[in-house]
Amino acid sequence: MRPVFLVTPALVYLVVLCFIPDVIMLALSVFEYRDGVIYPGFTFEHYVGFLTDSFYLNILLRTLYLAFGVGVLTVLIGYPVAYFLVRGRSRFKGLVLMLVLMPLLASVVVRTFGWLVLLEPQGLVNQLLDVVGLGPVTLIRNYTGVFIGLVHVYLPYSILSIMASLSTVHPSLELAAQNLGAGRVAAFRRVTLPLTLPGMVTGFALTFALVLSAYATPRILGGRTVHTTATQIYDQMLFLLNWPLAGAIAVIVLVISLVVLWVTSRVQGKLVIA
Image (cartoon, rainbow, N blue to C red; front, top):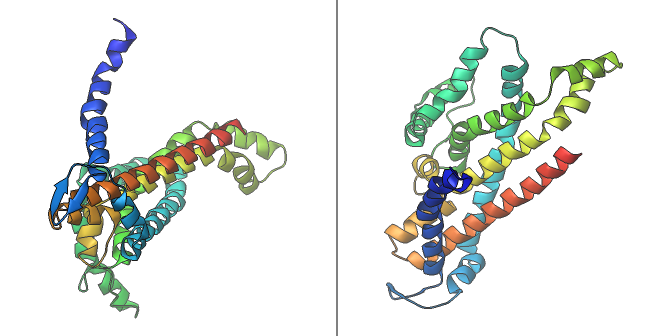
């Protein structure tokens, strides 16, 4: 069997379900839209309008801030967990790994509704905050609740990325550094951490791209008061029927995601070479 036949199913899948829809979306984004009617044509007014209108621009910037913050926090939280799972010798490693992977077995909607119950004014989180004198706090229908939900939803991706990177670093490297006079902290800081930076970059880039296009969590936890690029695309298509503008927003989100992935891949390549 020729090698090309082995990749044919994957290529057909990508072309039919990814490439062709993207081409249709790109073509639709340059169509004209007047008085609720879409006219075939060629115009960049939807891109210009989105990038110059303060309302839409604030939505884009807030979504970028949200994606960046979630990406950074998932890496910071995920690294100790990944280190424990790869280097730890505890008998509870299997239990921790199960807890990390278990959220992936449920849909994003189910997990987000779970956070909706926990974060509501009478939920468990506010009850605990009230016990210590810090509550109640409004944690839903705002960016705080959306941020918490997104961190939980996408944390496993950062943990798995860092675990893959840690698995390539042999423990003997740390032992060699300690034999040369470095302490455990210094050996980790000067040997393990630099060698696992590519995994951290991968975890951040993957989480950033996923958050940038996340819809269910911002809509459920944020309601109508929190606007992201994904919720705005949904509203433009289903309520305002402005498909060209929705296509333009989707193209902009796709381009930003591709640029971030390209930049992080270049950074990752330099870290591996270094």
